[in-house]
Image (cartoon, rainbow, N blue to C red; front, top):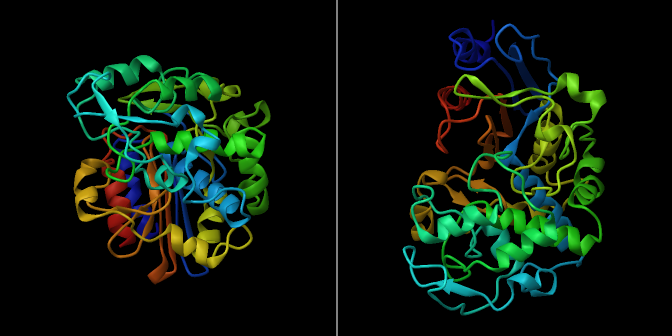
Amino acid sequence: MSSLENVLAPSVDDGSIPGVVAAVERGRELEVVVLGGTGPGGPPLRRDSIFRIASISKPITAVAAMALVEDGTIRLDEPVDRLLPELADRRVLRSDTAEPTDTVPAPRPITVEDLLTFRSGLGVPPLAPGTLPWQRAYAEARLGGDGPPGSHPVPPPDEWARRLGTLPLLAPPGERWLYHTGADALGVLLARVAGASLGALLTERVLGPLGMVDTGFTVPVGKRHRFQPEWRAGTVFDPVDGQWARPPEFESGGGGLVSTLDDLLAFARMLRRGGDPVLRPETVAAMTYDRLTEEQRAGAGIFLDGSGWGLGMAVEADGRYGWDGGLGTSWRNDPARDLTGILLTQVMWPDPAGSAVTHSFWKAVG
């Protein structure tokens, strides 16, 4: 048994997770571990098992956005008003505790960069869910992001944008890091500029060039035998024939993708080795440095746990970058050590800080 197996096996043996597929790549040396099964008494996992990657969708969406920035289709500094007129002429909530109608004018428009850095004024701060007036308004709008991916149906993109436009910003653009919603708004913007679905754009600009053949917003019938049920507190949260068995009305750039170990390895290698064939090295460098102030990092609370944020992904103090999926997945690149780590499970995390197996995995990776 390898050292990585020794670290992961106890979580499978004690029933914390039904199974795990993981990899650590150092330079050209790759170690892959596949343990456990789809659930209690279920068939064993495979290297090509398909998992819901949840918020690891965010970096993939961000890479597609930066590909369009490179070719001049969009600019980082341009207001989103041209493609998301629903977000023009924004107003800002006077305080976190204010009613949604108690607002002041935003000092400037939201930019594309604001969506990528999660400083658009849209999102979910680290507060108890459902306790404040704006949180109740957000939940009633059914925009997603106020619960795990797949918690409830989300409306089609145009209706989603319309509903979002009825809500105030929680902070002026550029001022505060707020989780999730910027990535979904970015997905709607990208689809509009491409004149296609977000899935089609991702396939054209990212998934296709990298050979990520099992990554998408739905799992076709022919691949469903490799798809995993999603578990939460010992029960199935979403079955194999559940929400990912049919194309969604809303393709969530913030949390809607499924993928496999080898697809994510292809994505991670692309970034680790300078972006080819999707991005230029200078674009990867621009995405993977921390753009937050100390105050913004502190205000992010448990979501970032002291890390920073670049364009669509976390950036840690030691230079590692990547992100996690709350449905049980985690990915980081470490450019200083030419290292990639990927952990895929089918058990929802108990909170944004992760799970015991996540912490064990990254402690072992070092």
